Image 1 (tube, helix red, strand yellow):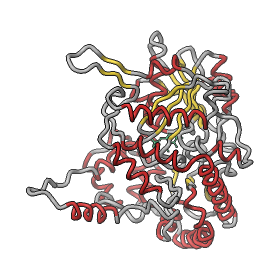
Image 2 (cartoon, rainbow, N blue to C red):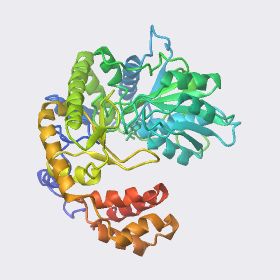
Image 3 (tube, rainbow, N blue to C red):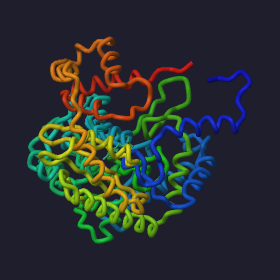
Image 4 (cartoon, protein in one colour):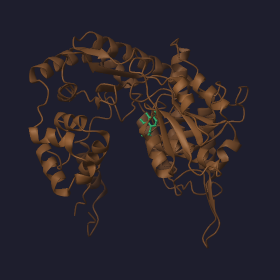
Length: 482
Ligand SMILES: Cc1ncc(COP(=O)(O)O)c(C=O)c1O
């Protein structure tokens, strides 16, 4: 890797381009996860240039680099405005921080809630089962207990009464999603925030995913329930600019209703011989690149731009949902109310994991979701504005993929694999067993064409075993090259 004489710039870029050829296509409107593409001409060039301007600026010290502080404050102000805060609203004192992504925003929301109550020795948070996995990660990292309220298989939302009942004296935070990632539905924020407020507990609205589009969809006439700072009891909201604000990766905003709520989020340390350290977020050294790129995106697209993008996305969602309705053997998990189309198979319908592979073979990259509690496996489509011109092509390909999946039938796991999935405990997984499993599944050598076998195996396993298998499988991929 470290070449003795170094490699010429063009050759290095050629190497990167060659590596990138194996990736899923980030542009073109056929990838329904991971990437948020507005398909706005010139935006990539603008954000690359903005990133370059600030790539070497360090967010570690806002007094040394006031340019970054100014851009961060502008991003926080913009996010607060979109989400019902700021001058002239019922939340005029909103403050916030720019983080590296949704996960960091959520970890910090949990940290702020936990550290606001040092007297609670065993803090807990209440989340719906549909809350993003990053809350479980936050709970794990911060040693906070997670109390999970189930979502109804019919509405895919938690019962506010069950959320309220889960609040205990040790609860430091109650969480809801607007919308949830898996199904794209907005939780009953008004009722949940009221229950939290009654108990004197903070309430975080995770609007990381769709928080930037919901207000625009509302302006277009979509019936979006109240979810932002206009709702009494909502104490913090997260929104990812690298999702529907269409900024390049690495930027999210965590907002608090006031500065006192934010204070315990900070980490300051002066008890060592080096520089005094004050970090609002988890990272210390931070590149200014993503922040400048996000700033450029918001400035360039503007309010009208976001409204137009939301309109295109809304139309794409409607078209994709129609395509799903038009195919025998599939049903929508929920009527789309944001930017997600999520469907499952009906009785006698195609195997969804095989269907996902058939769609991939036709150039459509969808996201399989494993069965969970009383929710069936499903297929998730995150819809962005770039999808709009492709919608008409999706229906026929979906029909063809379903026909092919029906013809192929479900994956038949080799009996020894099926037995392992149901009988194995995570502790019993030895490195040899994992290596054998991975080889049997065709894993270990980079991208896998057909994922149905892997997904079928994971789907058959209980979650603790799923987690362990995922760790082992990805560990096999993450090996140094020499
Ligand atoms: C609702 C929600 N919250 C949090 C996250 C985590 O965001 P990130 O992947 O940027 O850490 C996501 C990601 O999809 C999300 O959908």
